[in-house]
Length: 495
Image (cartoon, rainbow, N blue to C red; front, side, top):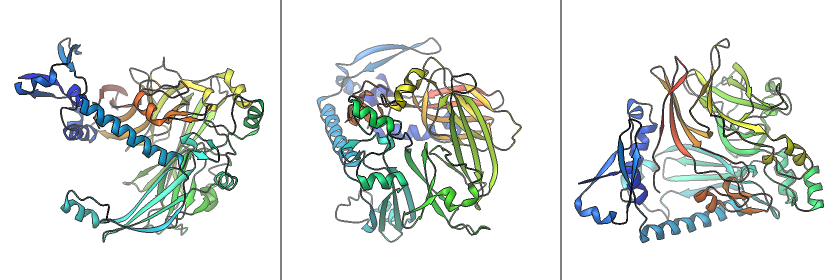
């Protein structure tokens, strides 16, 4: 019997993804099994040894000084063919979603058991057909506006609802989030505001530079979230009806009718008492949170302070907790060094923010203002600085904020489960070990190219921006000492 490391076998396709998914589920659950997770080893029978003829053995030193052997097994011709087929399918899917025109869809009935439905488990399917409720999701519309491409993160918001009637039918509705800018661009069929990651004209011509310089950099980024508030069962003092809130980075929240998905207006206009809280021009983080236990809705306002106290820029964040009458029950502000973040987490006692270290490139600010470069050239990740987690107490304004350092740089754009248990705070984060802004999803704004498949497989965009694929790391913080006790990386799951 030969013992082979599970990670290498998984990558070689010698075991099913199911067992790995079970391990990943255990890793993410708030239980003792999550903390005890370790990659297992798999025993192969002697009859399977022929699969390893071309394997390359590598000795790996463990933290305790011991060594173990792992096998680097090359993919089989069948596996390579399957990989190419998946890549082609992904390319076709991306071309359809990202570059084809996005249209609104009024309420359309779709039978769950239609002609194209393939049922593999009748019992589970029957249970699924009894589900009753509405699932909302916000995403991005086409990256193509007129004859130019915008960065995928700066495409217009596209809200969808799936209404399940519990009798085997679903009603589908979709709508472009019609902000004033969206209406103008859709009417004129061209990009009007260049934003931070896009351009209204080519950067390699004098007239294009002038057009970019005159174009506003005000453009929503990551219009990706949708939340229903107040809850449908609410009877609040002001008679505020449930509305669908769509949020974005670098912009203001909008309120939509949850049934028709039509835009009602800016949140501050639909709920006027919020105008004193959110001055004109307030910017928010796209992600919001709901505290089910306390029935509170939480938003984060965000501002880049330039040049800041030390001339290096600062990042300010302010959290607001609302009751179901949209009255503020608590708020907490914090300012730190210049950093970037897009997601944050809510636990029993803390707002948890990833402190992704970044710095301003002062020499490029003038170039951006004059239309000579993209906004992503104005800042960059500070990869020689370790990442930190900011723990901001929710309930006591006098309690200190803790900035907990880790052992390496990271850029954490999204969180998995984050929770407290037994004097520990467990954070599951989607971690980039290095990161270059500007080439996300394989987008090259300067040359108007879009190659998501190459970017997804290599981390390299056509403009040279490179970021390796993110990994899922789990950090465990001692909430008495506010130090990282453990850090573990989830094995890659083959697909």
